[in-house]
Image (cartoon, rainbow, N blue to C red; front, side):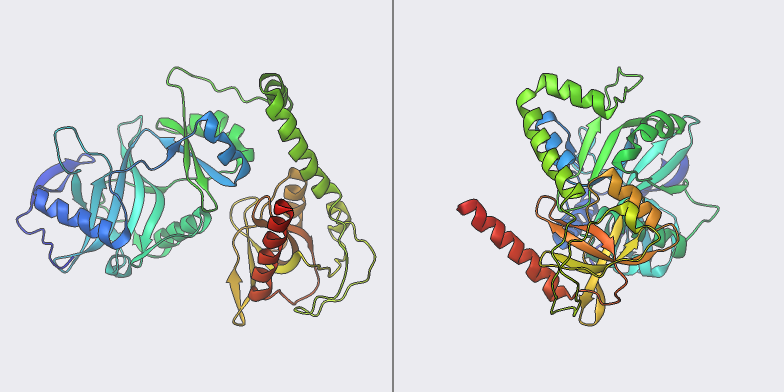
Length: 405
């Protein structure tokens, strides 16, 4: 940003009913846009989400997402950087007003620590005017921190946002408006979101955002403007309507669900053997992983050729855990395991009531491309990174060979 100056390039403007500065010269706006685009490969004006349609519904159904309401507020980038040797925050409109070539850019004042500006930080946010005509900024994502694009999953990105506001942000009397962080939810909280949370808000919402946990797109479900109440059907009612409307798809889905149910209820029969990488030995008896049998009891140290032992740590969000293996003698983040059914979800919630971290035997699922927790283990030995990667590679290779047969 050394070739950019704001001296004599701004003009007073009202922002959130308070006076601030607006960047008035297109040449300066162009330099800022080019800087962000070239350094972070980021388009200022772009569609943030793919609109959810029937054809793409399976992408949301088959891959884990975190959900959150989308407000009717205006989308902005909050760009924290150093210009003219000063800590500077630029609110960049992610829409271009008709008749203009560049988006609005306002210089606003918030007090973050110097480290947040030093190598650039960029938030996604929504500027909201609530029902009382008061303004607020809702942080909806973090795209750049410490000069690096944030490519971790949405859980870790929101943990970073919370950390920044808790440790590197100070509320002062001269702020334009309050800053809040968007709240995240799980699929099983959809009734609460629609019937309790959204009606309790002091601002309007336009839809539901589905944030991908993996390397998939974020989707947006837009509310019908004429719809005042959204009816949430029970699972049995949805299944019956789906069966009547799409009988072929229902049969296909039922077949997959039966397989998954069998895996969940019966395929927790693990063939025991000695794992050379972790030096864990188990007898050759079958072991039924029944959640109800393990809570509060002892746990077998079991592992086979598609299972590994991870340190599994809970997060602040229900059903979201992080698993770690050993790499270079340190814990290595292996992402979030899949929690494919309510039985496993409730079992883990009970298991983690008094603990934050548990060594867990996990089985790799080709369907979810994730590890699925099987059962806790008393062993302190955690699988090594190279063995984890080799196991995944081997399973995918065997699966491909079976497909080609």
